Amino acid sequence: MADRDSNFMSLVCRLEPKAGTIIGIWKMEESSDQLLSIHQFTPLEIQSVSAFTSEKRRCEWLSSRILITALLNEKLILNYDINGKPYLHGVSKSVSISHSNDHVAVLISASRYAGIDIEPVTRKVMKIATRFMSDNEIAVVAEDGNKALLYWCSKEVLLKICGKRDIDFRQRLGVRARPDGGTGKLEGNIISEDGTNTFLLNYFIFNGQLIVWATG
Image (cartoon, rainbow, N blue to C red; front, top):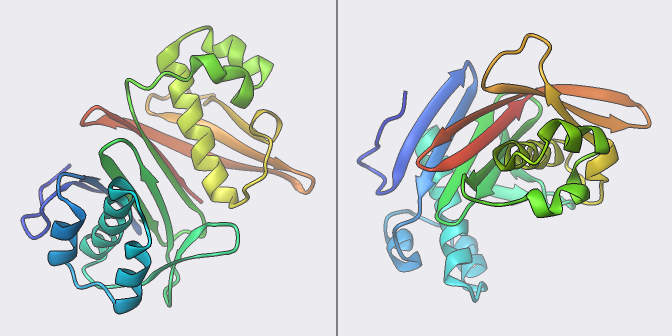
């Protein structure tokens, strides 16, 4: 299911979980100078990345663009809308990007909506549970740190799908087990004044990372 692409130094995983959807995971092992040398960036991209003072941020920025090229086998320009939501210039594909300590994950889909989040499985979020989970969700999690992380990643995915910065995680983003009880999947809801939009949240663990993704 996962394979290594020898043309790109750290592309460790490429998945096509369904038609029109691609997931790529990149392990950041190179310096920003090395990344600049293995990919043809535009002058504007080079100018943009040069503005970052953090080496880690430069590597994240460069790796995500190399990963998009590797997944699509073509060079596309990544832009952001006024809310900070990424999009690919000139194509009708949705894109979502996430970073953890040393990994970058990209989801590209022909669907209108796409969201992905990646976090190390060792991350602890139980202490901030009341900030992002409803009372009912906290009761379901019941002090289970692994489940709390899963809910955190799931809500990050829903946030990226709705594309809004200022949203109440507790009241507007809901996560629950699916009625069919299937493993590797949850139900996610984005609640607004216009109604509720429901998404299938898929999750798996790879390379010590928890990955949650959804399209719709």
